[in-house]
Amino acid sequence: MTKSDVGVVVCGCGHWGKNLVRNFAELGALVGVSDPNAELAETFAKEFSVEALTWDETLNSDRVSAVAIAAPAELHAQLGIEAMQAGKHVYVEKPLALSRTDGEKLIATAKETDRRLMVGHLLQYHPAFLALKTMTDAGELGRLQYVYSNRLSLGKIRREENVLWSFAPHDISMILALVGEQPTEVRGRLTPMLHETISDTAHVDLSFANGVRGHIFVSWLNPFKEQKLVVIGDKGMAVFDDRAPWGEKLTLYRHQIQWNGGVPVLNPANAEPVSLPDAEPLKLECQHFIDCVESGDTPRTDGREALGVLDVLLAADPQSDQAIFPAVQIHESAYVDDHVSIGQGTKVWHFSHLLSHVSLGKNCSVGQNVVIGPNVTVGNDCKIQNNVSLYDGVELEDGVFCGPSCVFTNVNNPRAEIERKDEFLKTLVKRGASIGANATIVCGSTLGEFCFIAAGATVTKDVPAYALMAGVPAKRIGWMSAAGGRLSDDLVCPISGSKYKEVGPNELEEIKE
Image 1: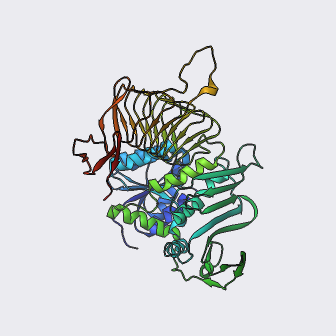
Image 2 (image 1 turned 90 degrees about the vertical axis):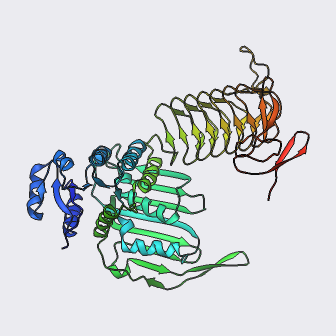
């Protein structure tokens, strides 16, 4: 056994922690163990000739450069943050955390302290999965179409978490790694049978923007044990069966489906076992953590990868307040009504309200005290600053900026005592437009692409593309480029160098070179 320069303390010596103790010891990195049960810690300390430490002693020891946390999931964020702030690198068992907020705090702390943060998504280090990932990346299976996994057994039945959070992180992690993106839709069906609220089985359906579909079935109430990942491509299929003998854990099927007169014709092929190096996955995982600590490299299953898995778990669990919004951050003070869709990467901040039948695109930022809807469409990459209301009839295309407290109307002659919903007029704000603070957009107008509405202006009619508008009522006082630079007489953008030309008395277009 070679002595490692990395000194690891395993925190939690129970059901799974004991395996981490053994592997870090065999890799020459174990310098101590820690467990709330002092007697248990002493037992492992004697067996592996290391120290039994309290948590405070672990944090304060100069001999300890890293910790491996195998504690209950609700403690992952607290322990991980404390360890990194004490200068320790952190390996934490799955899941990363139980909330997106805690997951982001762990990632932020790792960045602030320049510590490695790695999460125990074990099967990403299994030789069979590594070979499968290499095959799919090389296109051996062709274009991926469908991926499904079954993780079934009789027990171990938990009472501190449901089967989704206990079993599914491994499968979610593998599927996301193979597909290479986050799902656009997650649907979870969880079934409690032995307990009123703790689910024993879970089905998760995944849809991806690239057309791939996924399915996960996990249960600890099954008569037999099964651990299979099946990958379907248009040129072949593969099965990772972790219950099979080592030489049969990964099998390739070069099945082909061809079309003849609109009818699918199957051309089956013989199973081809894939040769794998014989290695314990957990040892490979522990070695990867040690290597990343020594080299400073980012772990394969770092905080960002684990946050993607956490997003799917939250989206699949009906008891989560993020159940239908994977990869979306919604502040706890915000309200989201039914029949709302929100794209990945979007953030909704304090005290905002999304009403019914709102479609909010990807990577948007919705500031504080914003009201959107009902029946409003917002494109991708939009920024809506504080105190803005987008009412019925307003549509924002991609990349629109709405400054603080800008105002949209939806009826021209409102009276408090007279309902005029049938008189609402549509307002369309086209791609890349910017609206300054406290500007007013009177309904029925169309704001052209990349136009710029000055702060405090009142728009009462259609605005040309690239126009710079100011005043009450707003008038064009110049032109703006797509990059946001005011154009001089030469119509050359001072920011990007792009060139423009006037093609009419009130019409500008970019010169494409």
